[in-house]
Image (cartoon, rainbow, N blue to C red; front, side):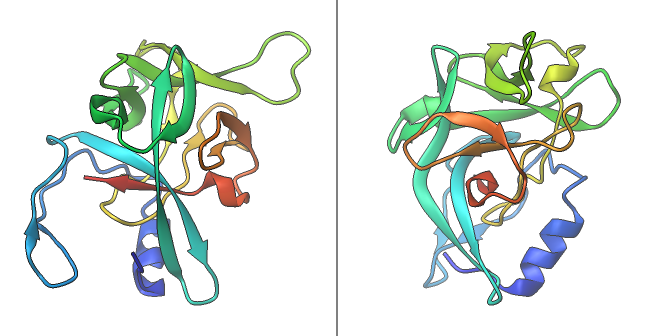
Length: 180
């Protein structure tokens, strides 16, 4: 899937505003309407890569999921495990939480004594927990980084087929596409 530089600029500018619903018809390469894979307010999240300076993106068949609390992209056909619901915390920041629908766990970054970098896992959802608040742009077939609100210099990162970690927002592994 390729997207123009103009579209990427619009998405980048809208990163602070998370879209909660999908209300557009999606079309394939020949113009046929594609049925939505997920209900309103749910998304699949895939790893992506942006090519500069052309501004095109590749979307990989590597779905973000949670298994036993481990956030990863080992799943290529994982049914309900690839569905994420966008949610609002009680912080009043709009939709800033991501809940894995199958495991009912939220994306959560945390530290333990001695850590210099936050860790990430799936954890019981709590709208009062600042560890579960993120910036992201849920826009169909575009790209976004998933940046932590509290650990603001860190983004969710994950290699294709690997476990997630918190890393630099400039890493190639920090680019995702929200699929509706």
